[in-house]
Image (cartoon, rainbow over all chains, first blue to last red; front, side):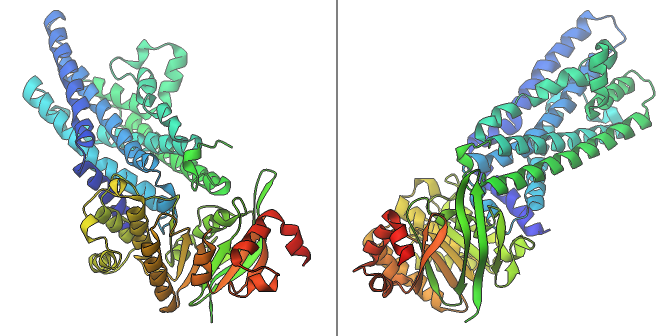
Length: 267
Length: 247
């Protein structure tokens, strides 16, 4: 694997962001709006709810973590979409670039762009709503790591879908976080869900993160085993997503989809 | 002369359609080979397979003896291409594009290489312009610079002068000829401009319905088949390939 080629994917993304206001804004605008919306809502809930429970670390913190997952996922897919939009697959994949290098390049691009969003969320949460991230202590690390891994997995899977079904399949990708969120209990305990939804929840790593986060904020013990299961699940999803992407790439090589990608062939 | 490209029994089908039907050919060192044929003859499919972006059903491709199927990245390092249907990203500047592709091909001393080629192809004033706003002729020249960045041993050019004015096209042909004579470079060139093919190519392959129908020197091939010009021969290949198969 060539580090230089991996960093070239990142450099391309930096060139694009540097030269485009419309690419810079989404890095922090939506997370900032989310922070403000949920921040004020939690403040309001604190005034109407019985004293003793602070909604800010439970709800606003959960939204912060969830937005981090979305940023990571979209960081991967956005970097990939740049090649879709500029019809650049032929140039990229006719070069010595390996699929693994390309995917790692997308991931590194996502890490860099997501960090900007995360930083903005930290600042707004701390300055406007007095939520210090330090409140979560070291627990924040496994929470972030699991959401990062799952975000990468879903991002790669999204890229595979778009490569397989053509540029218009982009619309499958944007709603994915919204489809997942009811199952993972970002804002409510999993016990609220009906049984069939709980079964799905157990298969999704973020469920364990948000259950643990609520337990931590409530002063209860956090289960290391649950986080371990969650981490393993997230790792498994990454392997699965990469396998799917490789298969789709192989399929695209066989049917000529890379060379004539804009044709949107699903044959 | 050693083989830079060896294509053996290459076949590609799309469902019931046979795009390439068991073709075999070589490109030797310092040789420019023209791949000719009517639309749908299988030229671009062949080039895509050599680029490693299309998997053949059967057959093999070796670039400088390196098997493309098993050592793709290593084989592709030795090639590059320019094609009218593969524009560079229009939202990056000329320099950004060249830096990106130069790094993907791991070109040494990239800045100097870019400077030299940009000067050679008269693109100095366009370095910081977005590729997408350039005229089609300027875009073609940038694509050619990109194709030459890594000093490819095998250069694949799919209608490289299609968007160029005659004067620029002549200069580009001279440049490519000069490049082909250096080192061990070989060039595979497709064009519908028979005048150009005759001026540039050392050897031509006529494809029809995915098969190599004729092969030879573009200067003597028409007479060998009772035609006055290469263009006349091309038209016969396109309209009445069976008459040539019999002859």
